[in-house]
Image (cartoon, rainbow, N blue to C red; front, side, top):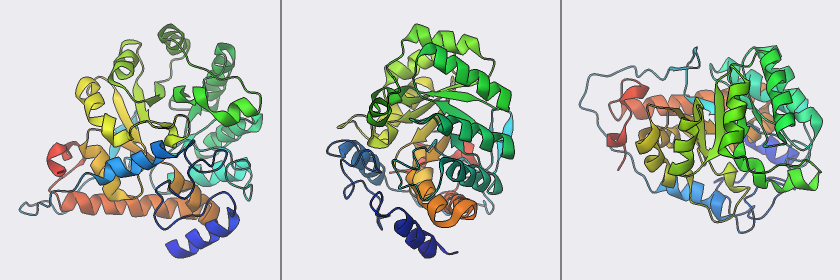
Amino acid sequence: MNEKQIRDRAREKMQGYCRVCPQCNGKACAGEVPGMGGLLTGSAFINNIESLAMYHINLRTMHQIDEPDTSLKMFNHTFSSPIFVAPLTGASYNMGGALTEAEFVSCLTEGAKEAGSLAFTGDGAEDEIYTAGLDALRSTGLGIPIIKPRTMDSIKERIGQAEAAGAMAVGIDIDGAGLVTMAMKGHPVGPKTFYQLRELKGFTKLPLILKGIMTVQEAEMAVEMGAEAIVVSNHGGRVLDGTPGVADVLPEIVERVKGEIFVFADGGVRNGIDALKMLALGANAVLVGRPSIWSAFGGGAEGVGQMLEKMTSQLRHGMLMTGCVNLKAIDYHVIY
């Protein structure tokens, strides 16, 4: 299937939940939560797109690089791309239910593996969501489960399940404290203190990722409590209206903590050039959300793999045209 066929099929399957707009910028779906939009005015989602669009790329072709290397080593594994699938859940209540949760996460994990990448798996307002992610992890041998900020006992139980499933790392969606859907469906979530998160870090030998960092202060706290990675993310604009875009806050966070902790950027990446911009702003890797959803609903695992391979190809071309031999060579000189 080509990209147009995948998008057309996804639009049909997700009718009433996602329009699969030609430009996914959060404007048409503002306020549609549950659904695919940003909370209230949708400005946090929109800001993710617009903050990335403010940056331009510096063209440089006086060099001898002809085959840029997009490979990345992370948590003792090597991947062919720094572009990964974000933790995505709610196939029934956010996406229309044309795929079951198990089918959806299987498409994500299998497609990512075929592309030499990785899919994070998620947690949600139905018990089978987290279990489906673990089953997919076992099937592919690759995956990083992300757990909602539930009660401490519930988080510890899920960390134990992730360890038993063979996860390479585990994470906590700390910004999920404000998820409307979790509250609506009777799953208590809430903020976690520094000491609670440090306790969870001590509970597992797996690398711990904190997802939902949007300030320098909380990035520094993540380093202090021993987390191995953070995800700079406003949860796709779905938990608090009016936040800045990820690309707005990423540079100052990176300036303070890069080299001490692995930094993922998650917010508004729609193609390989967006990924290049995030890497130039200091991220070690990026996560892709909504395009992964359309690709799964419209093309299954094959569609997800095609999407990741296309973005990686675009990133590689961008590296060629800016004189970057590998990911470490991508820095602020790439952007204007």
